Image 1 (cartoon, helix red, strand yellow):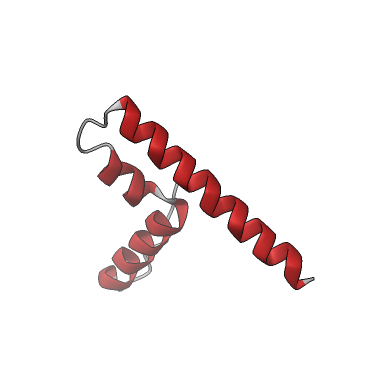
Image 2 (spheres, helix red, strand yellow):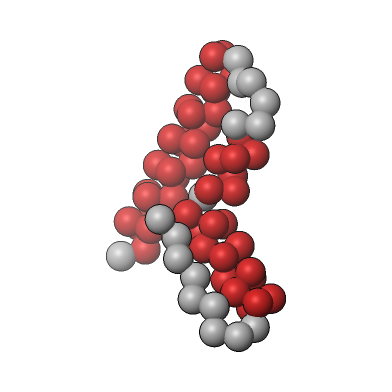
Length: 64
């Protein structure tokens, strides 16, 4: 659950909410679920995500 404290400036609260939604990945998930995704496309997307995650992990590990 995402909470945003509104203390006066509504625009500020909306910006904070959008930022939290983006960080949690909810916006990306909603956009992805907007249309049907074929199983073959889903499989390729998940493989690409796993590869990106692995590369990021290796990049961070090599820094230390």
